[in-house]
Length: 367
Image (cartoon, rainbow, N blue to C red; front, top):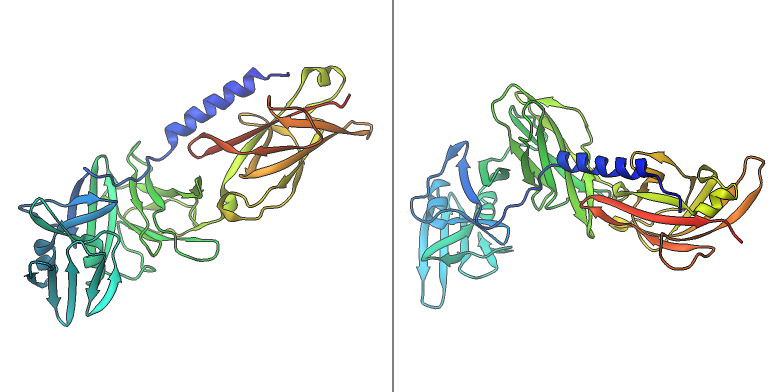
């Protein structure tokens, strides 16, 4: 088997550098310290503190409602316990341990219900705030999560020291839970992180620094991590703010196909760069796209020899060798070091590390 130590060594180096440069994923885990702000001013919770449960932020109901200008009422009939807030013709009613709330009598499902934790009544912060006419954004720095509650502003209005936008799929549907990061171009490893809400929107409050920012992110589709690139892929100054929207294309999940040829084929005069591969997709590719047949020659790229930027999925692979004098011969193929050589082989891309996918195919001259 022909082996290229430089290629493989370079590949490991490339992966190491890439891993060091990847943004830390935005994960709001239980136990994370939570700080809550209303219009930029901190909300001080004197008894129970905000907490994260099942990925949602819960806060003491009375403090949140009163801070948002509601009159609060606690109803306890023995069998039914409810937290109720009223303000200017708006009533929000949450029933303890019930997965529906009522806003002016209209039932709305909840991801996490209001509940009693350590004798304190805790309610979902986002639900209450957004149904009160506010925008809620989350960000993390280190082990601390910051929640900003602000009066709703048009998503198309640029705000100083704020970057915001929306993530949608190829059909224009909002994408919830996409990881978004703002990369500080002045200070190393000081990204600001957040996730998109149920409507695909995100918002990041930027510190008052004289620096520029770049935007990026990722999202997991059917087990595959898709790197996100903003529609406007340009840095911006923090003091001007910016809007950076993302559109997820399923075929942005790309992988590297490595091509190998056995030593005997080299001896017989066959050359790697004269091998033409044909990849026919089997079923749908990562993200649900149908894909298309890919035909091309192998080439050198950072990490090895073969084809890179191949849409990730499962393929049937065939190969042929065309010499410089135009003579073409069918080659035998197999998944590298797996099974017998045949006229075709099925290969599937798999993760090398998170977000990096590869497949390997081996070819040999026919007998």
